Amino acid sequence: MELGADFDLHRVLAHGTLPGIYREPDPETRATDLRSYTDAYLREEVQAEALVRNVGGFARLLDLVAAASGRILNVHNLSQDAGLGYETARRYLEVLEDTLVAFRVPAWSGSDRANLIRHGKLFLFDIGVRNALLRRPLDRPLDDERGLLLEHLVALELHQRLPSFLPDATLHHYRTRHGVEVDFVLSLGRETWGIEVKSSRRVHTSMLRGLKALAYRNPSVTRRILVCLGPRAQNIDGVEVLPLEDFLELLPG
Image (cartoon, rainbow, N blue to C red):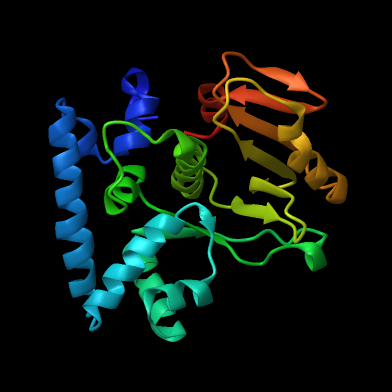
């Protein structure tokens, strides 16, 4: 929204949108600054502010959080992978949320609770920070991560805009125990939107399956939206297929 015509999706998915990083014209300097930021601030300042005693454990957890960003969070598994006790890992995650380094998108309960996954998703506050922590190449987003990163971008836009412009709105994700999922469920008063994000330019009917299942099991869903990188808006079997830019224009702000 703030970048306007300067918005470059390729750059955003690689370097994120921290103002000082994004405005740097030289790509190599952007990458160097981003890595310095993650090492100097996230690994040192956050753990110092939080009085973290197990520095190594916190660093391992931070890397695992970056790898899990945009995915369903299981604190028990995360604590084991980081070599930390469950309560310690839970407290460190709270530190990341309290310092606004990460945020959660909880699981939606809806009317089909028995069949739903209850774990939320965790997102880091910036895509470039996520990429730098994972030592991804920062000249371009990896092809096999493009869908995950695009979903991450949409999550950030929803998370950042809603509290200011629609404070009563709530954001969740939807996934059943059988693997049917929808990236986001946005509740706006009496309206509920199911939102699926795909990095493809062409839409296949298989991409609509989750949205259709969500609406079938939950009559409260009033709008089904597939966000993609296609060139034009269209309607397929009652699902609104919207280019990323068109979808962002729907959001307040």
